[in-house]
Image (tube, rainbow, N blue to C red; front, side):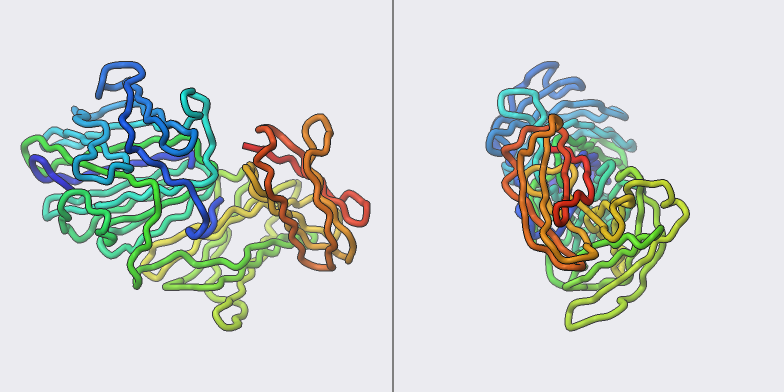
Length: 419
C-alpha cells in the first residue's frame, strides 16, 4: 500500500446488500475506469454524490460520501495513478494519533437513471492489505443478511467473522509497493448474489504523530489465489428431506482442502442464523466424494412453514466459508420434500424434490393474475428429482407463484420474487 506521509493501520469496511455457490460461477466484474461526474454537493465533502458511468453494460454506479469521522478527509475520490483503473480506489487523509473513516454508499443503477439494477452476482476483492512494523491494515466486509462466500489464502492476513462482518487483517507487517494486485498473500475475496447497493468505509488508525494519506483499493473481480492456502470446499449437492416433524440434511463434497469440520446453521427468516450443531466427519466416502448428514428434530420446527439452512465450513486454521442457503418447505404434501431456489431469482430456477412415486411432473410459473408465464413438464422417478427452468430473465420484476404437480395432482405452491 502506498503511504504518502507516515505509517498507519488502515481500516476499510465494505457493508453490502450483496446464496452463494462456488467461485467458478460466471459473475459480474464492475469497472470504475470512467471519469466520475459530480451530481450534487461539494466535491470530496460529506453529502457529495457522483455518477460513475458504464461500470458494466447498461449500469452506472452512484457513489455518495455519507460521513467522515475523527477529522478524516477524502483527498481523491478514485485515485488511478498507481492502481488498476477498473478498481475503486479512494485516497483518505487521517490525523496523527487518531482513527478516522470515510463512508461511501454505492448504488448500481440503470444507466442514466437512479433506478436500482440488481446484479446476478458480484465479487469484491480487497487487495494489498499490507503493513509495516507500525502499520497493520485491514478490510472489514459487512454483508448484512443472507449468505456470502469468501476466499483467502490467509498467508499474511487473518480472516475472522463477527456476526455478518468479515475482517481481513494483516499479520505479517510486510509492505508492498503501491497497490500490488499480484501480492496474493495480502488479499481476500467475497461474493454474494443479487447485489444492488453496498456501503464502503475507508480509514486509518495512525499510531504515531503527523498526518497520513493512505491509498486503498477494492477490485470487483476474483483472483486465483496461491496453492497451499485454504480453499472453500467444493459441494456436489446440498439437499433436505422432511421426515415427519424433522428435517434430514445431506450434503456431498467433491473436494476438500484443509477442511476441519462443518457447523450447521438454521434460520426462520433467511437472515438471522444460529448454529444447531457440529459435523466432524463424513458418514461415508467414495473416492474424493464424501457424504455428510445432520438431523434437525427441534421442537422449534413445529408450526413453521419454511425453514432455511446453511453450512459453515471451518478450515484447520480457523478460516471458514459458507454454503448456499437451502430453503425447506415443511408443510408440503405427504411424501414430498420441495425446495425452489434461488428466491429472489433473476434468470434461472431449480426445483428440487423427493417423490414417493414415479410419474410425470409439471412446474408452472404463474403471475399475480393467475396467468401461466412459464411451464416445464418432465418424467420423474421415485426418490430425488430436480427440474431446471431457464431463460426467465424476460419476466417483469415482481411476485410469482411456482406450482408443482405430479401425475396431474398439485403437490405444492410457493411464492417467488423476480428481481
